[in-house]
Length: 310
Image 1 (cartoon, rainbow, N blue to C red):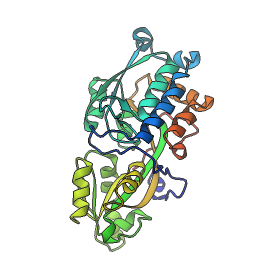
Image 2: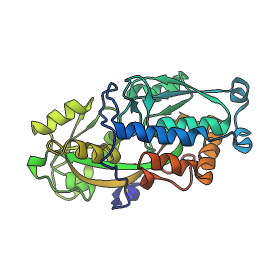
Image 3: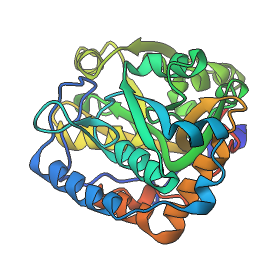
């Protein structure tokens, strides 16, 4: 859906509050007091959630029998999934949504923590049935995986504040620039699929490089080896607020569906969708997002395999 990519997300895009957790791509990062408070508030909402017979009735027979759903998750950073101040307990929006859905379905989520770039492989190999990692829906991923959506994110840009990079308002604003992004993300495929757009305008194409963690891309920006870094809009805005001397937020493009990932055709998908929709309808979902200050990322309807980004 190329036309969806070109839409600019304005002030309705997710804005992360300044009083938030200090998140990095390092799984050892600990939460601050405000994040711990948010986690406690969200956990209180989750604890009040009970089983919904209609949603639970849609579970496949093997899950009804076992009473468990195996899930894979990665400590990707605040506010999605990160470590509390004990450096052991996982907290975050995706943790709360996982636990809330499990309570609606009356099952236990048996969770494996692994590296982010191993999550989709884990679904394919059957290591776990469901993966979470702020995965956006793309046309390429939809060929292999099913998605059950539970919030919206976007594409955000960071720059070195001293370089005075202009705000990115459309994709071709990247023409001629050196653009970094995280290893294994959907951003790489989107950039590659639009590489010819600059040539049509008589401009030089952008150059892509990838980085494994926050420290490496921040250093690349500091040393001016890249002009911009592309990542989740939520994370980009958060990072700029936490490190204003090193990182400047340079705009958001597009809204992207994010959700649970399953193997293509898994009959568990409709049950997860029904559970998320139940949480939306009864207000629990809104309570969880409010606890994390992410109300503007809310969806009104959970979708199974909505159109993905090209």
